[in-house]
Amino acid sequence: MTVATESRFVDVAGGRLFVQSWSPAVLHADHTPRAPIVLFHDSLGCVALWREFPALLAATTSRRVIAYDRLGFGQSSARHDVLAHSFVEDEGREVVPRLLHALGVETFVAMGHSVGGGMAVAAAAGHTARCTALITMAAQSFVEDRTIAGVREARGSFAAPEQLARIARHHGDKAEWVLHAWVDTWLHPDFAGWSLDALAEQVHCPALVVHSDNDEYGSLAHPMRLLRHLRGPSRQLTVPGGGHLPHRTEPAAVLNAVQDLLAPLV
Image (cartoon, rainbow, N blue to C red; front, side, top):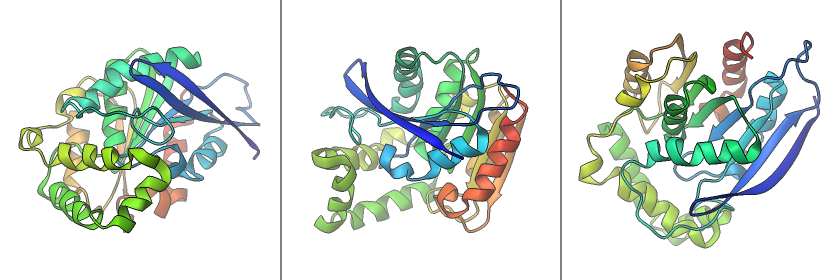
């Protein structure tokens, strides 16, 4: 299926967001408009690092897919502040409504990877009348020892200049800020008690929780805890051997599960 791609910038408080959208050439047979899928990237992520997944997602679901670089990431405006420990909730409460307004989007599906999964939960919780479904992939629902160990190991590896250069390929001169925003936040003692519990309890839409059985940043305790707190009809997809990138290692399984969730929804 042909998928058209469009890029633009959106002005929000604090700067400009780089936004890209993928629109399938063929929509649903009944021609009823479907809510677009809004993608939230991970701690080191950006639009470019979704690679071919948004196009595949648009083609599979026959829905428009929207991804954006958070402030401080990718092609969006730089940040020089320290992330507040409420940054996950802040994204859903403060940035999402401005983004949706600028794009003329009324209802949406929230979908995110890793910490972006937490932001998808925050978006669904903060906009219950507008969010028709929630999908998380490898989302951390609390601060686990495995999560901390993974972040510490990554901090050591990214200390090498050639590894930092990998981040700079997608984030340019924002690379140092991107790395510290991730590492310093998750390793801060005051962040140790963070969880998605309260936000998840405000989510009543259908949900799909995707997690791998060998995710280096979080055990299966994360999807189990998230599912306990979600208040709508929810289902889980466990991806064997998918690591922290189940949508990249097993795209067909993830796409099929997403389509099963969204097929009956407008």
